[in-house]
Length: 168
Image (cartoon, rainbow, N blue to C red; front, side, top):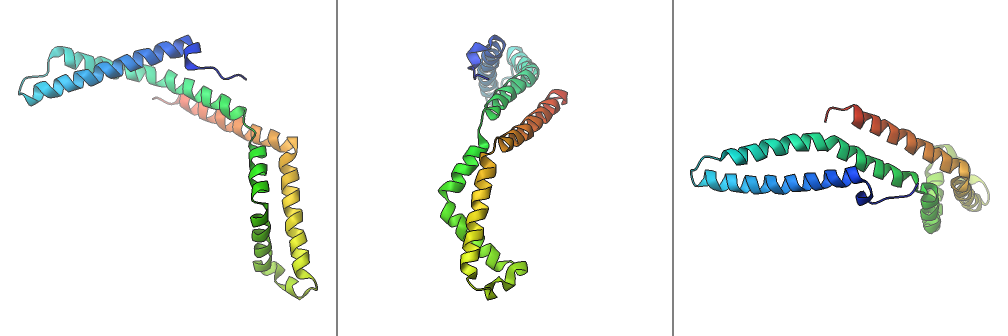
């Protein structure tokens, strides 16, 4: 899927212009109202009307805007290569991870007797290296990418349904 800018979606662009104009109008009305109330003058009808209309328009615009932003975020999430990113980070920190895996194996109560085996440090080092290599191979497998894509798709669909069904 290709990413598109907001101005390429006419409804979204119009909605953003209306929302932006109303925000500016609401801020100006609030400042005028505050100034008049501060001077002891009653808030004019026009200011009350602008505030009321602004609230109604924000309520109407909020849902389509939320859904449009969610759709854009979902498109970006779908194009990511998360397993490659994880594999890259693991590769970058390979030595620290091997050391951490070795420490955890040595601290593991189930593997406590490994220290009496000859060449146990070499065995633990080999187990750490093998563990990392297998993890990197699993992350490089297209099936893992598909798994992550399925998880993201299902979560995005669930969020989208929740947003559309919810009274905002």
